[in-house]
Length: 332
Image (cartoon, rainbow, N blue to C red; front, top):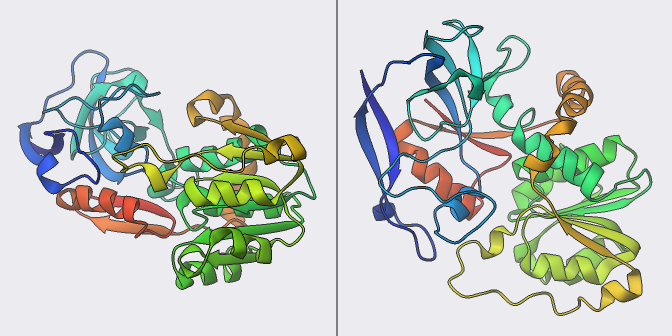
């Protein structure tokens, strides 16, 4: 059996280029003691992967050059040499960017294909969903009656943040997105109270218009001018949860910080970054609360699906460009 897998050949400078990567053929390795062989069905591509392509020290180890990359994946067990995992089981794991994966069974989490579509375990019921849940409720200390602003609001995390805030009693939810079509989606399908296209004018001006009474919580996926605008509209005691800063991921020079940080003194505001890996203790609570919302249709989600392992890189670049609505998924 031949496996196709994506390798990182060189560390990108600025925007990643196709020549930094290669789709390589390799022999499928049969499982050893305690291992499973999984045929991947869905792969995840996420903005944080850009950081792992650089050698700079970060919260996750860099991808190794000339070796297969990693990422979230859901697949079917086709061979097992491990107790408790059978052929035909569906599992969530972290050996994506390839068609087949052989790894220790302890790294696999069983998922129920009958309870929800397999792809949702990479998005709305997976890591991105938990990111939204933990960042809003724990890091940003959301409480009923808060006014919430979300950047990158049509993405996998942002769309869920806004909807959870509404379901938990936010007084107003505002989102920013990169197209008029996405703005319409936020208001008409996801139930945001207001949304704006950040390309249509100055973010700070558009935010003040959408939230004339200010915001209590800002969930940041973008950074840059969005963070500065949020600080400018922050109410007293406001909280900012830093999830991502996609606007600066491909910069070759350090981006200037917000020019209005002194306003945090006036508002007694708080900014805190977070990683979903620090909040896995919330997983049972997250599934028990969000699962029924998804099943009932109260919490809606979108997926942008790209077909084929050969298009995995293009799907990833599409995430950096903002091509996706909701979770970007590669279907094999």
